[in-house]
Image (cartoon, rainbow over all chains, first blue to last red; front, side, top):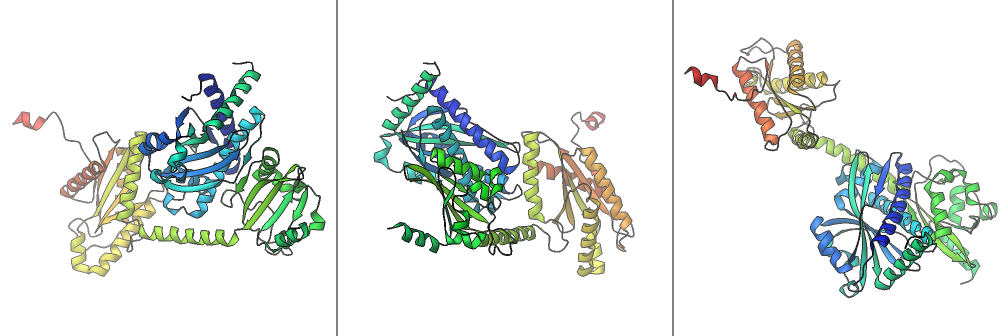
Length: 207
Length: 322
């Protein structure tokens, strides 16, 4: 049974918070207004459970930005918001007076960029602290319902994959929007990630 | 494929291609870039990118290049979130408006080092089309919310605002007030002066009401027939009543002749006022019913007046005297 211990969980949470903190800084600069991001919780779940347990119950229409990262461990990083929340973020960023119904392809690109900023910041925070290197691809944006999430569609792969699941809170113009950060990993990649965490902790003298 | 042929291919692309080496010096620059900057490869080769375009230092583009070269991360910069970053022009000889740009930044391994590929797409036409569509849709939306005769908000506007204000008042536990405004003896006005004159009168009343509200920024809506409604977020019953009274006086002093009126020789209005901080059992209907009830009482009491909704007394003094 795969699991992350408390120390590992805390270290990852801290590193991701460092990453999203940097992303918040970039986003604040772009919109000339304060944007806050935090990731209060971290969980490790089987990929097959993600759809049923987390997504299925909460919302059905999703906005999703994914980036593939290749390095000492490979991961598909996913920023996922209920569609309504994603539209509210983008309209706040582009034009606060815009109605969500008015959003178009143009705004999907913007969502892509927002996801790009957050996911890259998370992965570069890991790369920095673990002293490793990743190669990151370009972001892809999907609007999708939970049933047809392309990434979770392959039942064969699901048994061999795990998901590191973080809640993400985005606060902007007094409004808090909730979403999730997902890191889809193979079991061997998860082990490689945890090795990095353990080495990082050892270097800090905690372990 | 040899390097020369590769460079020729790049020159045929309908998008900008720039390659930066590990020190962010320019090592490839296609024809598209020359066309939109008036600088050719010889002029820019080996120049650090930020030296050629000093203004990028304060933009995200600079970070993205750094991320590509040092962390091998790719990025996208969209025209929606980034104002035309690079000084690229349709005709650089007469630089007027910058091209809207969609930029992709990807790390590329080159001679055992990391290079950074920058691809730039001209989005000017797309952005312009987008703006035009947005402007059209904004004006269409405005039309669907406007009463065709009087120019004030229509019933759809009112229903939409009521829903939004009520939800807001409920979550913030703030008061929301409603004024139901009715023109006195309007049927008699129509019967005597005809429907065209009736329409004219409705327009005049709507204009006076809306003008009277200009300072606070509230908007009146035509609720139906000769009835208007006004929502006042964050107003208690006293404030709402004072606004109602001011509107009533404005209409009276507008002095629009009404020969058939039982009240005055000119147009007058009656207003029912209600205000509440939404309690769990109260709905939007409660607010409307209360304002309606107050309006009927104002009519019964002789018209040309404002009345606030009075909750039914619980001690029932009348019964005791029986």
